[in-house]
Length: 169
View 1 (cartoon, rainbow, N blue to C red):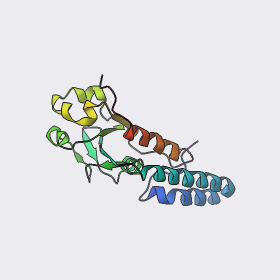
View 2 (cartoon, one colour):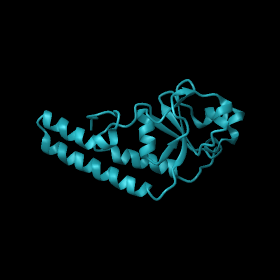
View 3 (spheres, rainbow, N blue to C red):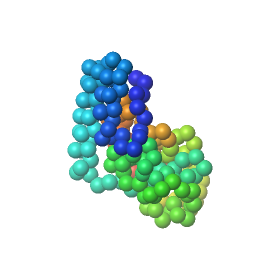
View 4 (tube, rainbow, N blue to C red):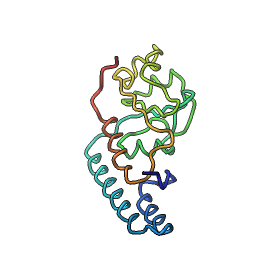
């Protein structure tokens, strides 16, 4: 399905309403209402599941070794998936700071973010739990389309963020 809405200021609470409104505008109100109900139910189920889990410390990193804050589209997705962003604003990332952030998951914003292999090329990062455990999670820089597939995409991200560490080979 084609995305009908991209992240905005408050996408998860406004997505079902926006989907419904767009459907009405294009004469597909009934179909849009079904999609909106599916999205709302999926988001509610994910929120209920995550309510019993500890947030995962996450670093969002993209092209040019830049750290991205929680207000970015990908940052909003990470928060909805049970992650806690360790930086508050977009900023250049330096290796010394990255080591001290103690992140359990490294979200690599694509295109252009790091890979496990590229991160392992920096000896300074060997002590970072996410790198040591091989928990590098690729996420689209633009976030996920807000459509019927959104709850599933966020569930998959939550599963990746909350999964057991993997072998860093």
